[in-house]
Amino acid sequence: MLASLNRATKQYGRTEGVRDLTVEFPPGEVVGVLGLNGSGKSTVLKLLAGLLFPTSGDVAVFDGPARAQRGRVVYLGETDALWSWMTPDDAATFMAGLYDDFDVKRYRELLASLAVPRRRTKAMSKGERGRLRLAMALARDAKLYLLDEPLGGIDLLSREKILQSIVREWHTDETILLSTHEVAEAEGLFERVIYLREGRIALDATAETLREHGKSVVQTYREVLG
Image 1 (spheres, rainbow, N blue to C red):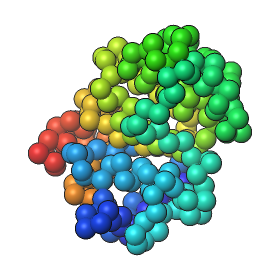
Image 2: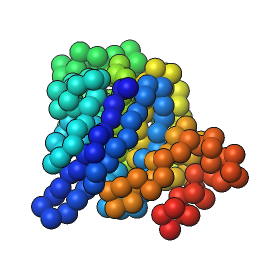
Image 3: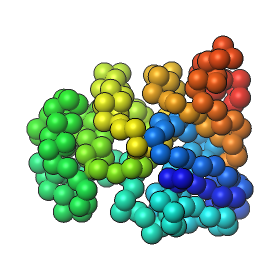
Image 4: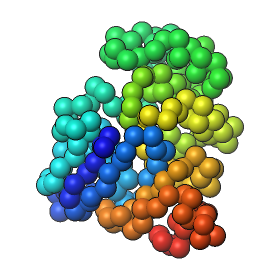
């Protein structure tokens, strides 16, 4: 198993981000992690990334504690932490110095396919910065990619480019967990969907199973979480 949560609970003071959550992620899946605001989506991804520690239970990645595997996992969070002076070339230097698995050639190809401009980030639009951040993430040669709202607040054309790049860069031995509110646009990407409600799994199903029952991912979202 590539990654798993076993009866994992994460508390923020008196609030629970996830509660007694058990779920497994084998290699070779593209998984939609879906839910309303506050349902626990970001908590799940941050636990797997080793950025949060569970209050109770276990979180494992590559058969070890998630916190010990942070350098082998790609996490793209919601926060845009790019420095205003940074250019795409500066970003490449930064990433190559930080991660041994950063592939500069792949990064250049992603910059081209995502139409990222060669200027400082302070002169980029939000969509351009989002595409740059995705190129930085996908250029790493990893087995687990955790993408938290990569489409949030980004224009339609940028969202289309991002989704196309995720599809193009995915390999069958890699697993991608994608959290998004843009469910309709990302639906074709998902092989499996996990619907979260108040820190618990409301439904875990393959997209094929949903289709066999005449339901789309969006329809099921409305029925399960509406």
